Amino acid sequence: MSIEPDNTHRTPAKYNAEGQPYGVQTVSFVRRGSRLQGRREQAWDQYRERFAIEVPRNLSDTSVHSDFRLDVDAAFGRKAPLTVEVGSGLGEAVTAAAHDHPDRNFLAVEVYLPGLAQTLYRVGQLGLENVRVVQANAPEVLETMLHPGSVSELWVFFPDPWHKKRHVKRRLVQRSFAELAARVLEPGGIWRLATDWSDYAVQMRSVLGESTEFKNLHDGERSGHESPLTQVWASGVERVVGGAPVREGKLPVSTGNASVGDDEDSTGGWAPRFEGRELTSFENKAHDAGRLIFDLAYRRA
Image (cartoon, rainbow, N blue to C red):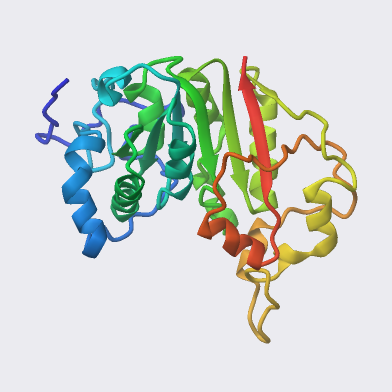
């Protein structure tokens, strides 16, 4: 489907679940450099036409025209269960999973162009045919680009935690995003989440717990002294910068993300580490800093 982007005015074509026009509402990402060089530039030039979804734009190079609908079967050249990773980064997780599960289709959604180029480099290195990438704002992908009930699994691994309290509103996993996730997931579909910051983990658990569209696959599990939340509270690791001691005269910039608790987490609901998630360089850094990983898994009702 070919739709020319409307560049004649700046009026947004649609509104998000919070009633804010796209291009105006708070987004969960900060634009970084888009320059490609070396092997990333080569990979983008070589594989873009074959594996990158060309999206008609409305406002910016990460927007999705509200009339665009992705024909997933045509994009992949076959019909197969679809896994969507939101914020795919450098593509470590999605390409490893695609390699291990050639019977599934994988869509990597990312706003950072060098990350998508690195993903395509991995696709080429592994000789994958079941990965597609798209540079787009994830809420727009879930609200209009993908058809309802078209996704088998949705992954949100280590989204930006937005350390400062005044920036918490920019976090991706909020009620409005959960509604969009419910829209695209098929009945019985799985939403997997992971973060290395306990305050965001508690927010994720609260948002999904309040939704009637999702059921926690590990409800009540890993509570009390077995809860990673209890362990974080006891260790105090999040009250230091990056897991390291605070320098004399400096304030711990990460304490805005440290959840507050001096007792045991009686709620639990934490999933075991998802075995299908490649141990990425980012996750390794969290381990090196002494932070714990919080996994959550929910089934679409």
